[in-house]
Image 1: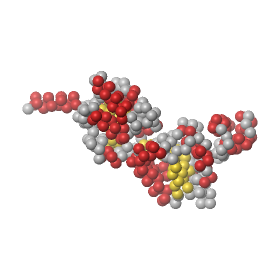
Image 2 (image 1 turned 180 degrees about the horizontal axis):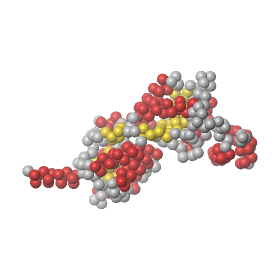
Image 3 (image 1 turned 90 degrees about the horizontal axis):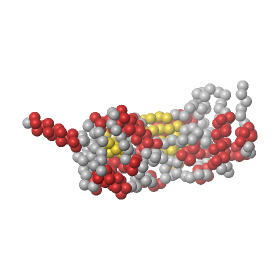
Image 4 (image 1 turned 180 degrees about the vertical axis):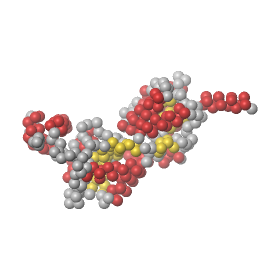
Length: 362
């Protein structure tokens, strides 16, 4: 049988002290981020984290004696909490509801930077973490290395840290929405939203492109629309300038497929400021189905994300992970439904053609 890999072997392999290895693997402060990265990578390569038991064997659930009964819920930077509160609030409601049902308490904190995470979040005082939205990859990686259950909603870490991820089915949802627009006769479409902002935005863009490719519709992305500077939620004047340029080049698309409802409503306002009407001049769609969609003029066609269920499901994933610690990390995709409202219609040219047909038949 293979002998268990020790901290001393990891230290010898890297040429660092056993003390440094111990602090890094236990999530304690005092080790640089670079050294901690090297230690975790070496530990994984040498098999330090492997177990002699079957990987899928159920591990003992956290007992009442060892459980702290506390779950940390981590949010993005505070400015995004304000802008997207209508989206995050139902998710948090679902998290709170399911934690309460299981006799657990929640500590909600905004995003921390660097070693502050280690100083503020004591791994020994919590049962796990649920991350909501675009929290930084560096922090998610740090949390993942602590060995406690970590569930990310609408995001994931690109490091070696093993986390469970919960997503809306962004790719297929936008693909079906784009299919619907194409079925209505649209042949000129543009995606709006910074595809670098979050994994969800990128997946929605991929779903949009996939639909166009499948239908053989050429797509030349307007780079300004998929690379809005800073955050996609702070660029009304920039968006007006980009759309104005499209109008001047006679390149206004028949439909804008937006990465989220906030961007869709901003796009409609930008079109309106240029004297254009939605949907008669251009169709616009969103994603999320926040409360404002049904109150906006025109009411927004969007994709309904089951937000409260995402929160509930995240807690269920965390509780499952406390029992099956050695099972492979999971990615779960929750389906979402298209909600058709007033911001979309058949293309303007097709309307004219239909009118001609009706006149000839009279």
